[in-house]
Image (cartoon, rainbow, N blue to C red; front, side):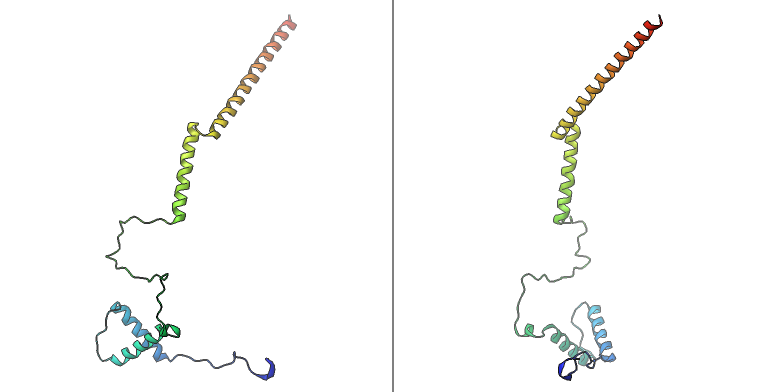
Length: 160
């Protein structure tokens, strides 16, 4: 308990919305969506419309926003496009990451093509290393053949 025997803010009474008020607000919202934001026809429900307009105005301009009108140049307003306005055939703009990924992939393909042709430094080094290894293996094979021939000749001489 806080000092001084005062009660905290947690035990205060809660305010609940009236169910009729919630139904009315939902009805107005559905009408707005059905009309697509167009002007409503003045009919028997004009009292409800005027009160809902006041509610919307008070929600839009609360606090300092109602006193000072400030346009944020960085804020991008969401404009809905109609289905007929959307151009499916238009080329999609790639993000920076997608562009970089594609460039990276193309560079890798280019490098592999040059590598297979033997035009890169690494490919030249690999080919030189392979040539040395190939020569060493050929020399080792010749030596083995010579040793084998000598052995055969020694054995054939020993048998005689």
